[in-house]
Length: 160
Image 1 (cartoon, rainbow, N blue to C red):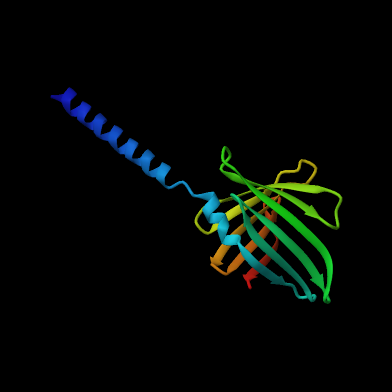
Image 2: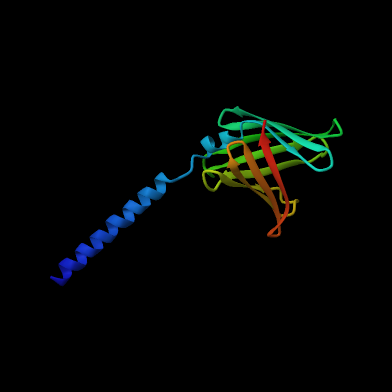
């Protein structure tokens, strides 16, 4: 009788564990679909008359992003980013070129929930820097730059 009850309890536990695993697998975020939230033109204005404008287009399973920094009506820098989805890592790899820099920056980006995610700079010569972004609404993103565990900058981007 005790053995039968023990086997029934073990069987129940195995069923519950397997159901939880199946539910966890179903809850995996669709990174490609979520990244589509960035498609469009985004704008950020700073106090010193500086504007950041990014035009993001879908390209395959990724994005092509053309951005510019404008100060007093003049383009002072441009940035091109290519987002490519890495299925094995379930993250996006970003290659970034800045007109003002001879270096190419490599980053990884992914969503941690339906409206939040992270971007990590992966170049070894850079200090450990990451960004956290959150879609507050479909047309507003808040992005925080984090270095050594401290928020060093926060910006808000609005979809035009």
